[in-house]
Length: 334
Image (cartoon, rainbow, N blue to C red):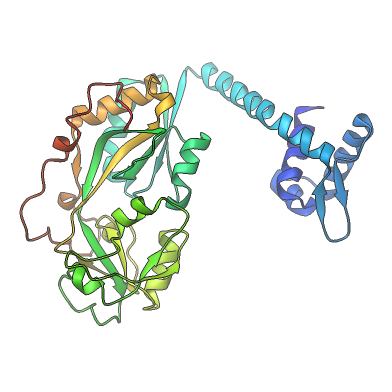
């Protein structure tokens, strides 16, 4: 098979629809059909069951898909590395962001690029329900995630950001006129839920109960922050968020209120423990440690939203103290 024909087969095996496959690859459905028929003639058997209503892989098609996928991915990676090498780039580090304030963290990215001009740094957003899966699947090399992360196959590195908490409510919500709220107030309303991530991890972002033991009722299941804001804007829920949302996700139908009795979120580098010796990951971790973590509560606003007040309670410990048990790189798995 030609490489392009392999791509057409694998795309159809994923989409199971000739029209969607054609649109995705910018070719015609007739071209997709022609390539598949040619492949079937060469192989001597059908790769897909086709009816007027559905397209399904045959057992032969499933076998071919399973064997071609890693080979095709390896070929694409090899070609991409060759292209980068031709431009003098010898490595690429892909960072997946759960917080949406990549601009606040520019000092890390800029320092990494300055220290390693022959490496490329690619920063992208990751939806939280897919975060650990994307990391384990190899879609990203490093994940910037809130703590704690207690996964046996993942390593926790240095903290990049400490961010206070805010509560998002609809602009006409009964809490919207307040200057701040407590977690006890949150318990009077539903909070969105998610069942696709580890319970301990989501609970650290949105506690299930207050410090006095009041249960915070969980409401609709959400897929991402935008989904949560949609429910919130309709006054169906209230939603806890890190404070940088007040600068990066300003909406006329949403009001953000500082939460005065909830600890700040710590966001740290996380990577697969099997990649602990990866020089690119270790180099970014070294940059973060050299520069120190960012205090999200002191980042200057770029819009009209008021900076959330810091919690009126004992000062938080230095986030670096929580990681002093981690030795110099490589970091030991948690």
